Image (cartoon, rainbow over all chains, first blue to last red; front, side):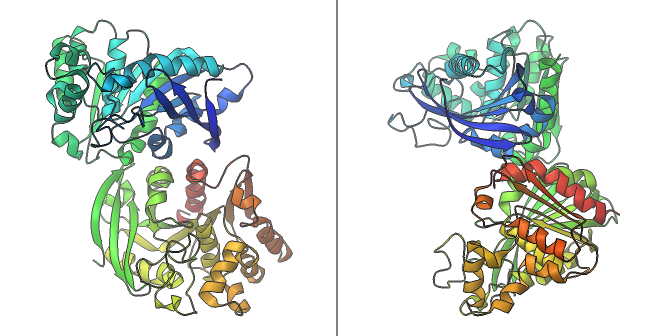
Length: 287
Length: 287
């Protein structure tokens, strides 16, 4: 077992495990939550796994407490992984100075710029190290059926990790994703910091709107964005750019962008539509 | 309008209003949350109201964010009120010294002991001042259909307010209620502080196990308690005492105490069974 189980909490008929493990890619101990649905307790059963990537400032706890993915995941027999959003405590100068860069803001990339190379490798952590550790430690998780979703920065993570790894994830969806980071303040700040200002090609490798232009194959995506979301209004999310690029590539037919009237950027929004995103994932994970 | 609306948040198709108002009974400004289901937005509609009373340390925010009541309340067309658990900022010496007395720990009583008489009148606030203010400010709330539920100290509040006010509440349920406060450390500390050590008759007036002995009429109660709840194990809740007293009074037939395997005292427990408690309330509020 690569993990310490620090708590086991009953939730919606299943178990929420609070886990920690020493991660190589991020160079520190990482905390996360793993929800095992009731189905996972049955002898010999294998359940599919949905990764939920959180947004800026969050840990793996926010959505486990307030997102209500467990409600739908319990009913459908899907495990949910709630990872942290960055390394913690690396003692890099400035890592705790801003809410939108450094701690809590790993952006699901591997930094190429010093000093962030020291552990800001959330891309490798989420796509390789964490799933490998989970699948080797928890027999009841089915490594052949993995989906991904996320919120805001984590929506960016979900879209880009799906688009950069054909076949790795069987489902993808997002809540209020940062859809075109190279053209919004949050993304520009992060990519400048983690890659460098002059690394425009590297920036594009982690931009869903750029990636979708090259995508071949099926693209079934559910995206919810609230019309009352101040970050949407401020141009941080730019979902229309993603849709436009997919359309130009002839691959927008199965992208379902729902503009939800009055909803904001909070977990009140996520919890309202969590069941829909679990149902979307289930279409592919339980097919 | 007796209230300031400090935020309006879309949630499960309805609106969560963050409210503040100047309360006389508690001698301070009180904050609360009011969830209006989609039904309440229809012209001329009147929706029933479920009061959710929180436990020690909580404000009206905890359950609004983590309790999942909006899920069921939205579907059934029930408004939910999430009040605070005590006055705040009265500058009474010692009011912030302990998690289980003073701020965040009003215990839904009217204090009779100085200096707490200055505003620790949560009984009057919850049973009279707050509902009167709500019903005079929000036409869409039906004052003739009110239910009550709560958690821990708030479960004590739900049971005692129901039993002390025949006919006022059409439904009652509780999560992990402090069911016999005169016989547990939390209750003894609170009643000693708010009433005085020698006021045993006053203590009994706010003890569900004592009150149920005198109760005449129907008593349909849903109570959930987790077997993994450390406060249950420590003897703070004593639901068995309540059941025993009701049985001796010949009035336990419709008390449904469910011991939920492994569940703890947290909002993971509450959210799992919130739908059931809304359904229980709906049986009476929508009858």
